[in-house]
Amino acid sequence: MRKFDDLTEHELLALAIASEEEDGRIYADFAHHLRENFPDSSGIFSEMALEEQEHRRRLIDLYATRFGDHIPLVRRQDVTGFVQRRPAWQIQRMGIEPMRRHARQMERDAARFYRQAATRASDPSVRKMLGDLAAAEDAHEQTAGAIELRRLPATSREREDDDARRRFVLQVVQPGLVGLMDGSVSTLAPVFAAAFATHLPWNAFLVGMAASVGAGISMGFAEGLSDDGKLSGRGAPLLRGLICGLMTTLGGIGHTLPFLIPHFGTALTVALIVVVVELSIISWIRWRYQDTPFWAASVQILCGGGLVFAAGVLIGSA
Image 1 (cartoon, one colour):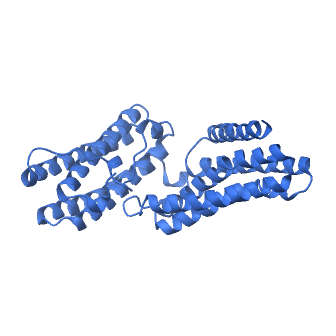
Image 2: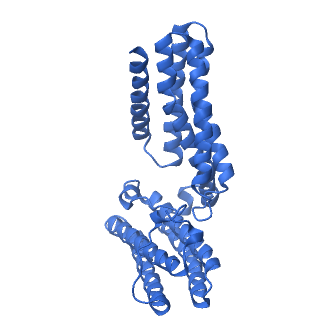
Image 3: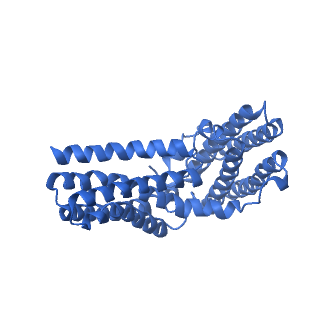
């Protein structure tokens, strides 16, 4: 993958062209999905799709003037740290509110990209175009917000601070959840394998501590080095890495501490109860902050945890 700072001026424009096309198609999908039950919202998304097409046309015209007819294929997934779009069908299944929030997030991401790209452009015409598009995307965010106003009266729900919630989810909840899931699930196998292999709680405790601390260090570095946060808006990499690493360690230590109990049967029972609590907390967080249905989140987490636990038991009992 390429680093954003290594992209040339013509590659920045090519990336912008591909991004505008993708965003326009997502808005068109939203409009098509809503046209029967929410015609007003569908109309707004259609207008936004048309504006994205106009932005793409302007970018192509500028590119052709500056660099010729051939436009290289540079996509979001080719650039380190560039925010990735979730498939439109996943958002559509969640209803009108998640679609509105997703649209506003898309406009924030696009405006951030254009502002970052404008600082790296040396040609005045390119820099002006990117600055103008950043302003247009900021205006788009206000347009996306109108979907809620048209669909719901102001008295029907409390006003939320979407910006604060978004920053909290991106910078705290997301890395914390990744770490908690990894720590709670991945350490199940070594801890319970050691427990069933030796029937000595202290040995299981030592293995669990080593696995938890090691996983926390590994996940902390992985999260911190994966994205500098400039384009994704996910915040300082040091903070994200620290949160992810600590939550990974915490997730593993939770079901390791019961093995300080010297009686094997009691320690095992308490550890299993802690595992169920951990997986339930993960399911609740996914439901609360990621718009995942609670039953679906519970089934996914419990199935994954159950498979890892079973692997540990089988290996330890062999």
